[in-house]
Amino acid sequence: MKTKSGKQPDSKSAMQAAVASPDGEERKTALNLDILLDRFYRLAYYMGAQIVRTERRYGRRMELWFNRFRDQVTAKYSRLWISFKRWGKSMLRDAVTPVLTAHAHVSQYGERVRAAAKDSRRAVLLEILQIVWEVLRYLGRGIARILNYVAPVCAVVALVITIQHFTSLNFALKVNYGGQDIGYITDESVFENAEKEVQQRIVYEEAAPGQKSGASVQVLSEYVGDSAADTEEVEPALVSADAQVISMPQYQLAMVTEDQLTDQDTLANRIIEASGSEITQASGLYIGGSFKGASTEPEEVLDIMNDMLDQYETGNETETIHFVSKVELKDGLYPVQSLKDTAEFSNMLTGNVSGESYYTVEAGDSPSLIADKTGIPLRELNAMNPDIDEDFLPGKQLLISRSVPMMKVQVTRRETYEEDIPYETEYVDNAQLLKGVEEVKTSGLTGTKEVVADVTYIDDVEVSRNVVKETVLSEPRTRVISRGTNVPKASGNGTSTGGYIWPVVGSPGYNYISCRIWGYWGHTGTDIAARSGTPIVASMSGRVVKATQTRYGYGMHIIIQHDNGTQTLYAHCSALYVNVGDYVEQGQIIAAVGRTGNASGNHCHFEIRQNGSYLDATRFIGTRSPY
Image (tube, rainbow, N blue to C red):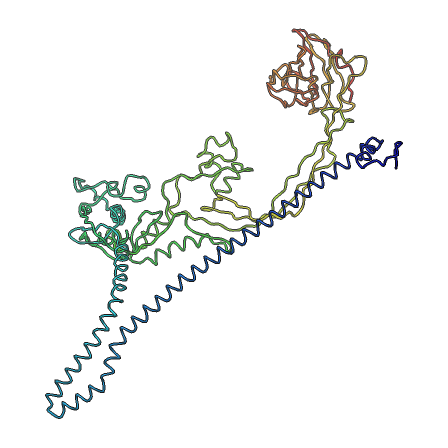
């Protein structure tokens, strides 16, 4: 293409011309984008190449460093191995060389003995002794060289054994009691606990009638402690005159091994043995950590307790039966006065002790049901709990016994039973029904479920229930109630004004005004006749200022204060459903029609009051029921 001047346009001019064309702006934008992409590609290529080169360079360096490290380690251990082999060869050579030297002279030794034999027997003996001395001298050099290697190793082993021995030793107290060493203990508390155990093993005798309790009589608490747990379990409260008080021990610091330490039970036996009292080998019965007596026939004591547990067996394979308190029979030395025969143990274990037992009220309980559960007469339950009817709520504690068994028995068994599933109630608003009216559209049905639970009893009284599994046998059916939302309007020759509604709902054909205001002297309201129990609703929203019952006059009645300054009264009710202070909405059920007070028939006496005056209610609610 040529211009008017006839010259061929250069590329720059062509580009400018293209840009100046209508599509020039778009071409310029595309050109700039191509340039930008080209530069981005070059930058990415350069960065990628640099990363690859750097990675290779550092990779070679790491490989070179690793190879050097490997060579150094290999060379080091090679030198060590070479040194060790040299040392071993040297030690072996030092040990074997004397033997080889002696062996090399064996032939010479034979010739020397034969030569000496030609002289005399004495010469032979002297030659043999000379040979033995030479052999020992050769071997002695080897033994000495071996000891040079072995002695340091033996010294290290001896040091380790010595350190291990002394580190296994413990500082302890050597106990000297009554002039006898009775053991080693870690601290004085071990002896104190053993002393308490010794005192528990003594069954204290009561002073004989008429005996003076002088200085030789000790209070029991001085021996077994002042806590109730220690004193209430042992019955005689005095010590006989010939009972000995435990003497003071003497301690000396010592170092002993772990197996030389004396435990509490062994120390208690040695204390009794060293006391000089008359003792015997027996088994002591401990209940809840408290000593109850000793027996030389522990099998019979076990039989008594097993018989007690057998009484609670029901044949249920899942049940576990055991005593609530921890029961132990400890073999040891016991004073003779601590022994009890089988009859004494039987009376003690099967008897009762003073103490109160309580029952925790559960949901669904009643006094009569609790009496059945616990097996006590209802009269006795009421006598022990005078306030049983006050706050009878789940969680309340009821006294059921003033004495408890000596040995409480706990039984846990897995039980399977059926339980009701309560149905739910669903409310559906219905604009066709007047407010306050409810109709059951679908009756509710209780479901059932099978429950598997681990139930725990103590002395036949349930104390806990842990549900393991529940299986629904039949689903409950939801009860559906249609609830009216339509606010009724007055009808008839009255006009509804001021927002009041007819106060009595339902009872079609039997819901009418039976007597208007001032229908007779002193009649200050409007009577609406209806069947007994017919719902009464709030004619207007407001707060209840009175809800009470009088023997005459209004009988059971309610007064509501409204925001417009008026009050409404609903009298002669058979039931009240609200309390003073409640705020009620218009149409909310507040009472039921009745004939309490001065009334000759079932009706609602309805009043509208303003500033102490009685207004004609028909002006506000009409003269005819909207129902």
